[in-house]
Image 1 (cartoon, rainbow, N blue to C red):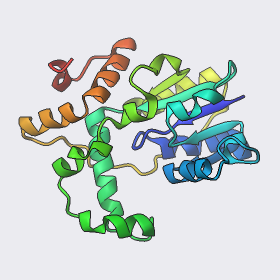
Image 2: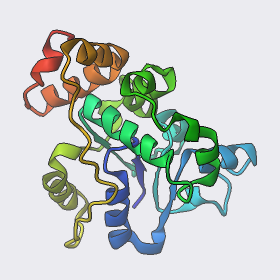
Image 3: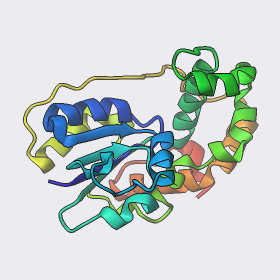
Length: 223
């Protein structure tokens, strides 16, 4: 079976990777980071064999337009979504942690340590931190996915995916969990964060509508 799992940052991708490893073992690729994909592209090895992309199950931080040419009639395309503001805030606190832990990634630490005290609004104002869900899967590509899970209902959705793919029983780990997802208290701050991530908000609300779930009230006036 050919499976491609697009890992949008801070959408339970590490936990999901460990579940995939339980089921597929050495048929599963490494969990590819952006730097891995860039190195493969620069070295002309993106798609050559042997390479991480020759595995039966591919998982990583690649974008839909980077793997669309690999999708066949047999491919199961998977992604996980998360409330856009909670995803943003979780990513912000993960970034802050990396700014004070050089052992995690020394090169990134050296580049970013001066930003250890960066405010959420400063981080969120950077274009590279906006609309990251759409960055990875596009604004209109949800219908191409065979399975879309929701971080907020991770356990239930894993059970649903298990039935879809006829998996054996799996244990559900939780990695890189963050308790820092509380929204700012000031309404104008929330409004600004939504404006900066409006594409993600619209995509997420489209997904909720498709599965008959209510749209969060903070997003209603922006749709």
